[in-house]
Image 1 (tube, helix red, strand yellow):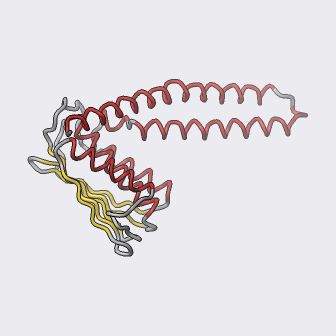
Image 2: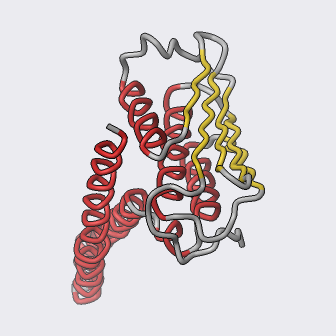
Image 3: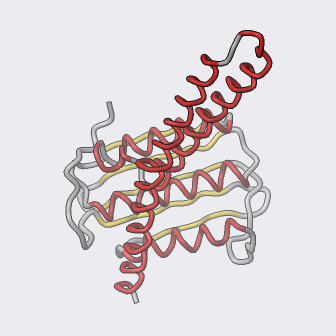
Length: 226
Protein backbone atom coordinates (compact mmCIF):
# COMPACT_ATOMS: atom_id res chain seq x y z
CA UNK A 1 0.00 0.00 0.00
CA UNK A 2 2.81 2.40 0.91
CA UNK A 3 4.54 1.73 -2.43
CA UNK A 4 1.30 2.33 -4.33
CA UNK A 5 0.71 5.59 -2.48
CA UNK A 6 4.27 6.72 -3.18
CA UNK A 7 3.88 5.95 -6.88
CA UNK A 8 0.61 7.88 -7.00
CA UNK A 9 2.18 10.90 -5.29
CA UNK A 10 5.14 10.78 -7.67
CA UNK A 11 2.74 10.72 -10.63
CA UNK A 12 0.91 13.74 -9.24
CA UNK A 13 4.20 15.59 -8.77
CA UNK A 14 5.24 14.82 -12.35
CA UNK A 15 1.95 16.26 -13.55
CA UNK A 16 2.50 19.36 -11.39
CA UNK A 17 5.95 19.80 -12.95
CA UNK A 18 4.50 19.63 -16.44
CA UNK A 19 1.74 22.15 -15.68
CA UNK A 20 4.21 24.47 -13.94
CA UNK A 21 6.55 24.36 -16.92
CA UNK A 22 3.72 25.12 -19.34
CA UNK A 23 2.54 28.05 -17.22
CA UNK A 24 6.04 29.50 -16.96
CA UNK A 25 7.37 28.80 -20.44
CA UNK A 26 4.21 29.16 -22.53
CA UNK A 27 1.43 31.13 -20.83
CA UNK A 28 3.80 33.45 -18.99
CA UNK A 29 5.78 34.26 -22.13
CA UNK A 30 2.63 34.87 -24.17
CA UNK A 31 1.34 37.29 -21.53
CA UNK A 32 4.66 39.12 -21.58
CA UNK A 33 4.47 39.49 -25.38
CA UNK A 34 0.84 40.66 -25.11
CA UNK A 35 1.84 43.34 -22.62
CA UNK A 36 4.61 44.57 -24.92
CA UNK A 37 2.15 44.71 -27.84
CA UNK A 38 -0.27 46.75 -25.74
CA UNK A 39 2.48 49.20 -24.82
CA UNK A 40 3.43 49.58 -28.48
CA UNK A 41 -0.24 50.16 -29.36
CA UNK A 42 -0.61 52.81 -26.64
CA UNK A 43 2.41 54.73 -27.95
CA UNK A 44 1.14 54.52 -31.53
CA UNK A 45 -2.28 55.99 -30.76
CA UNK A 46 -2.64 59.73 -31.51
CA UNK A 47 -2.80 62.15 -28.60
CA UNK A 48 -6.41 63.09 -29.36
CA UNK A 49 -7.45 59.56 -28.41
CA UNK A 50 -6.18 60.01 -24.88
CA UNK A 51 -9.11 58.12 -23.35
CA UNK A 52 -8.39 55.10 -25.56
CA UNK A 53 -4.68 55.32 -24.73
CA UNK A 54 -5.52 55.31 -21.02
CA UNK A 55 -7.69 52.25 -21.49
CA UNK A 56 -4.91 50.44 -23.34
CA UNK A 57 -2.48 51.34 -20.53
CA UNK A 58 -4.91 49.91 -18.01
CA UNK A 59 -5.14 46.68 -20.02
CA UNK A 60 -1.34 46.56 -20.12
CA UNK A 61 -1.16 46.90 -16.34
CA UNK A 62 -3.79 44.20 -15.86
CA UNK A 63 -1.88 41.92 -18.20
CA UNK A 64 1.28 42.49 -16.14
CA UNK A 65 -0.63 41.64 -12.95
CA UNK A 66 -2.03 38.50 -14.57
CA UNK A 67 1.48 37.46 -15.64
CA UNK A 68 2.58 37.85 -12.02
CA UNK A 69 -0.30 35.66 -10.87
CA UNK A 70 0.61 32.99 -13.42
CA UNK A 71 4.22 33.06 -12.23
CA UNK A 72 3.07 32.72 -8.61
CA UNK A 73 0.87 29.76 -9.55
CA UNK A 74 3.76 28.14 -11.42
CA UNK A 75 6.00 28.59 -8.38
CA UNK A 76 3.36 27.12 -6.11
CA UNK A 77 3.03 24.05 -8.31
CA UNK A 78 6.80 23.62 -8.51
CA UNK A 79 8.87 26.20 -6.58
CA UNK A 80 12.17 26.68 -8.39
CA UNK A 81 13.74 27.52 -5.03
CA UNK A 82 12.93 24.01 -3.79
CA UNK A 83 14.94 22.47 -6.58
CA UNK A 84 17.85 24.90 -6.63
CA UNK A 85 18.15 26.24 -3.07
CA UNK A 86 16.52 23.58 -0.91
CA UNK A 87 13.55 23.09 1.37
CA UNK A 88 14.56 25.76 3.91
CA UNK A 89 14.76 28.59 1.39
CA UNK A 90 11.61 27.44 -0.40
CA UNK A 91 9.68 27.19 2.87
CA UNK A 92 10.89 30.58 4.08
CA UNK A 93 9.95 32.19 0.77
CA UNK A 94 6.50 30.59 0.79
CA UNK A 95 5.80 31.74 4.37
CA UNK A 96 7.01 35.24 3.59
CA UNK A 97 4.91 35.49 0.42
CA UNK A 98 1.81 34.08 2.13
CA UNK A 99 2.22 36.48 5.06
CA UNK A 100 2.47 39.48 2.73
CA UNK A 101 -0.44 38.41 0.57
CA UNK A 102 -2.80 37.48 3.41
CA UNK A 103 -1.57 40.07 5.96
CA UNK A 104 -0.84 37.39 8.54
CA UNK A 105 2.24 37.03 10.73
CA UNK A 106 3.89 33.71 9.86
CA UNK A 107 6.85 33.07 12.16
CA UNK A 108 9.17 30.66 10.35
CA UNK A 109 12.21 29.10 12.05
CA UNK A 110 14.59 26.31 11.12
CA UNK A 111 17.52 24.41 12.58
CA UNK A 112 19.74 21.51 11.61
CA UNK A 113 18.35 20.76 8.15
CA UNK A 114 21.07 18.80 6.32
CA UNK A 115 22.32 19.53 2.81
CA UNK A 116 21.30 17.37 -0.13
CA UNK A 117 17.97 16.00 1.04
CA UNK A 118 16.43 13.42 -1.25
CA UNK A 119 14.07 15.00 -3.74
CA UNK A 120 10.95 13.18 -2.57
CA UNK A 121 11.69 13.92 1.11
CA UNK A 122 12.24 17.64 0.51
CA UNK A 123 9.20 17.83 -1.75
CA UNK A 124 6.91 16.04 0.73
CA UNK A 125 8.04 18.18 3.67
CA UNK A 126 7.45 21.32 1.64
CA UNK A 127 4.02 20.18 0.40
CA UNK A 128 2.88 19.38 3.94
CA UNK A 129 4.11 22.77 5.15
CA UNK A 130 2.41 24.48 2.22
CA UNK A 131 -0.92 22.75 2.83
CA UNK A 132 -0.88 23.20 6.61
CA UNK A 133 0.01 26.89 6.47
CA UNK A 134 -2.59 27.55 3.77
CA UNK A 135 -5.25 25.80 5.85
CA UNK A 136 -4.30 27.79 8.95
CA UNK A 137 -4.47 31.10 7.11
CA UNK A 138 -7.76 30.24 5.37
CA UNK A 139 -9.66 28.50 8.15
CA UNK A 140 -8.18 29.27 11.58
CA UNK A 141 -9.11 32.95 11.73
CA UNK A 142 -5.79 33.99 13.27
CA UNK A 143 -3.26 36.76 12.76
CA UNK A 144 -0.23 34.58 13.57
CA UNK A 145 0.98 31.12 12.60
CA UNK A 146 4.16 29.48 13.93
CA UNK A 147 6.16 27.22 11.61
CA UNK A 148 9.27 25.31 12.73
CA UNK A 149 11.45 23.05 10.59
CA UNK A 150 13.99 20.93 12.50
CA UNK A 151 16.52 18.33 11.44
CA UNK A 152 17.97 15.40 13.38
CA UNK A 153 20.37 12.63 12.30
CA UNK A 154 17.50 10.43 11.15
CA UNK A 155 14.51 12.64 10.39
CA UNK A 156 13.03 16.01 9.47
CA UNK A 157 10.43 17.39 11.84
CA UNK A 158 7.83 19.98 10.96
CA UNK A 159 5.64 21.78 13.49
CA UNK A 160 2.86 24.20 12.54
CA UNK A 161 0.60 25.71 15.16
CA UNK A 162 -2.01 28.40 15.53
CA UNK A 163 -4.36 29.60 18.26
CA UNK A 164 -7.36 29.78 15.98
CA UNK A 165 -10.87 28.37 15.93
CA UNK A 166 -9.70 24.76 15.76
CA UNK A 167 -11.76 21.79 14.55
CA UNK A 168 -12.54 18.15 15.26
CA UNK A 169 -10.07 16.08 13.19
CA UNK A 170 -12.38 13.05 13.31
CA UNK A 171 -15.42 14.77 11.88
CA UNK A 172 -14.12 17.57 9.68
CA UNK A 173 -15.81 17.47 6.26
CA UNK A 174 -14.83 20.84 4.80
CA UNK A 175 -12.23 21.43 2.10
CA UNK A 176 -9.63 21.24 4.83
CA UNK A 177 -10.39 17.53 5.23
CA UNK A 178 -9.09 16.70 1.76
CA UNK A 179 -5.86 18.53 2.56
CA UNK A 180 -5.40 16.60 5.81
CA UNK A 181 -5.77 13.29 3.99
CA UNK A 182 -3.23 14.39 1.38
CA UNK A 183 -0.72 15.39 4.07
CA UNK A 184 -1.14 12.04 5.83
CA UNK A 185 -0.65 10.09 2.61
CA UNK A 186 2.49 12.02 1.69
CA UNK A 187 4.09 11.43 5.07
CA UNK A 188 3.06 7.78 5.36
CA UNK A 189 4.34 7.02 1.85
CA UNK A 190 7.83 7.87 3.12
CA UNK A 191 7.45 5.89 6.34
CA UNK A 192 6.83 8.98 8.43
CA UNK A 193 4.19 10.08 10.91
CA UNK A 194 1.71 12.95 11.03
CA UNK A 195 -0.01 14.07 14.24
CA UNK A 196 -2.93 16.49 14.28
CA UNK A 197 -4.03 18.02 17.56
CA UNK A 198 -7.04 20.31 17.43
CA UNK A 199 -10.42 20.93 18.95
CA UNK A 200 -13.01 23.65 18.44
CA UNK A 201 -11.95 26.89 20.08
CA UNK A 202 -8.53 25.59 21.11
CA UNK A 203 -6.32 26.06 18.04
CA UNK A 204 -4.48 23.52 15.94
CA UNK A 205 -1.07 21.86 16.03
CA UNK A 206 0.24 19.74 13.17
CA UNK A 207 3.46 17.77 13.66
CA UNK A 208 5.12 15.71 10.95
CA UNK A 209 8.18 13.48 11.11
CA UNK A 210 9.72 12.25 7.86
CA UNK A 211 12.78 9.95 7.70
CA UNK A 212 15.74 11.62 6.02
CA UNK A 213 16.53 8.58 3.93
CA UNK A 214 13.44 7.74 1.95
CA UNK A 215 13.30 5.97 -1.42
CA UNK A 216 14.55 8.32 -4.13
CA UNK A 217 17.52 10.29 -5.52
CA UNK A 218 19.24 13.12 -3.60
CA UNK A 219 18.80 16.76 -4.45
CA UNK A 220 21.76 18.64 -5.85
CA UNK A 221 20.78 21.80 -4.00
CA UNK A 222 21.85 22.64 -0.48
CA UNK A 223 19.51 23.88 2.21
CA UNK A 224 21.40 26.95 3.26
CA UNK A 225 19.11 29.92 3.72
CA UNK A 226 20.59 33.10 2.35
